[in-house]
Amino acid sequence: MKKRKVLITGASKGLGLAIANKLAPIYDLILHATNEGSFSSKIPDSNFLYADFSDQSQLEAFCKKLKKDHGDSLYGVINNAGITFDKPINYQPEIEIDTMLNVNLRAPIFICKTAMKIFQQNKTGVIINISSISGDGGNAFQSVYAATKAGLVALSKSLAQEAAALYDLHNIRVLSISPGFIESDMTGSLSQEVRDKYLSAIPSKRFGKPDDVANLVEFLLSENASYINGTNIQINGGLK
Ligand code: NAD
Image 1 (cartoon, rainbow, N blue to C red):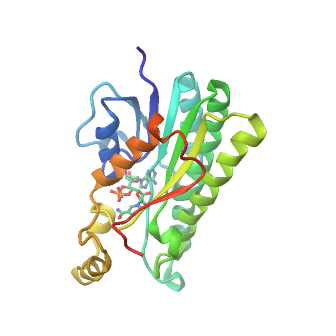
Image 2: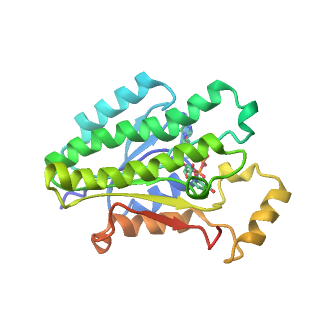
Image 3: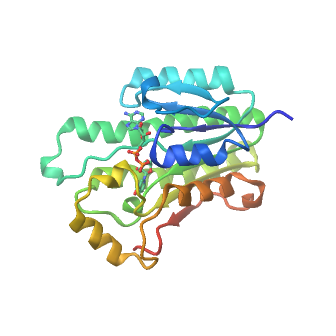
């Protein structure tokens, strides 16, 4: 039987790569990275799409190609690509603000727009937007990043309602996930002092692994999660 297709953005490393490895036996994957050189190794039999989401024209071309090449059997979209530049907003250059808005929020909005059109035709589909604990509770020195991540939660909840209201389609689900502190390049540059502070505040007494998030994504995409819709799922070891 033909496998259903799932797009994972930012799939070359970190959470995206773990999600790709987890889903590879189940789905026909469409793996996104900024460019071909980003992948240190490639998951065999996958489809690849490249785009720098800070560049509007690359995002536009990406969405067109997604619809043209994969529109017939696209079932899942994992908007995972994201970037942060941590600093007080007074010192945040405009280029960093724009990059976070474009990569973390504008790109997922346009990818969701493309996916919703495809799902409307196919009458089924699941979108999972990777938000962050910073989007839930805010975080000093991550104000713009946190704003983009909070935006993804609102986007997901709104689209879940829209699918039902506008198209009367009940097999389209839109969700977001808010990871806490997960070991990856994004958290790898934090000082030992900051890491110790986080660790002491996590009731599960460990940092999250990319696989923890990948397990959740696998479940949320599955039929077993068919009644989970329009909500944000936190995965943070109890960190508040
Ligand atoms: P990472 O830095 O390892 O990976 C980020 C991914 O985003 C990479 O694949 C990268 O290629 C892609 N990306 C960055 N800039 C891009 C651009 N301009 N165009 C296209 N793609 C771009 O980080 P990660 O920890 O794996 O993060 C994955 C997602 O999880 C991000 O959205 C991040 O905000 C979110 N998140 C991570 C944590 C954590 O603790 N690691 C916590 C909460 C949320």
